[in-house]
Image 1 (cartoon, one colour):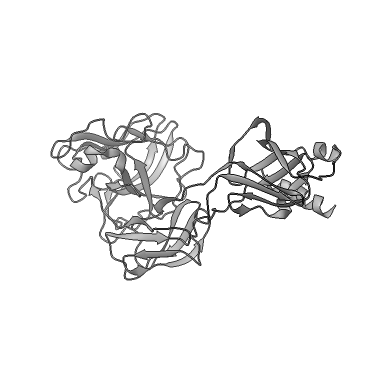
Image 2: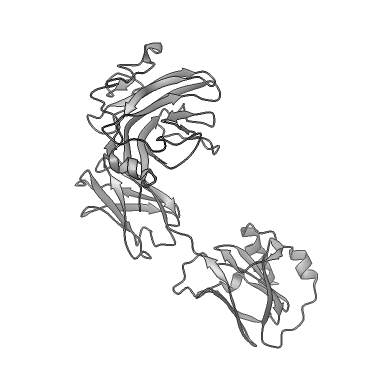
Length: 390
């Protein structure tokens, strides 16, 4: 009964719905021979036979003599015995969330009466590193690196080695998807930040204060041939251009001396408010291989004006919808780096197909056009093309 209670607890913790009452109702035949496997399925989808699964999937193994289990292993990773339910004709076990030391693509079952193995592939999730939450975090301040599967690859408080050049970053906290760190006081701009976990063969480099290929010259705004709709919004200074000294409501610049654009006002449903329109010059390496680059920029939202599901901002020919997932983007008055792959497609791509490299001009724009009437208090700056991570 204690073992059965443990099984029920394990089942309640996972997403798979297992027909426990039906399993309990079956007569359990004593297992007195070597185990055999006739079929493997997912516990929540018993109709389709499988030859592989993902981490944390609950797998149902059918066959004979599957009781009296000693161990179940996927590759060389053993399942916690408390999470296994086994009887004569069926065994339930979750795929452990742990990187194997050796990938054999096999399932191994050992009982008191023998062993059996069968080819079975466990999908190994890749490490995903998105980059710094704010690539321009000042030395001495804290920031976050976001991604996924950090825990699997040893990116933990105890094991992570994070540096900017030779300057060591203090790791404050780490989860599966985020690592919080302090930028060292002696960190230098335009230097890669490297991150290496205990289960990583090589470090991954991400940019820190890398200005990349700048799109705009904020000292010549809006630039030759560029225009904005700021004449419709007299409260905006110098065609939306600010330096943080304008008064209440204006955020501090991203870094000392940097200028930014701020729009605080209403745009009607499917309106067309031009923050900037004109022509930009696309560097030759970006034009030659746009899929290798991101459009990066920093945003700062007033906490009362998040970018929700109605937000649409045209960036070139791309329609950026930051709240499309249903989760609004809110930086709560701080700056956050945004990254959009130049090969991503919404209504179109960020750059026209086959765009001409500098010195030829490429038509481009920043336009607010929400699906419903919307109040904005949004600041943006530092538009650049930056090489993708990895």
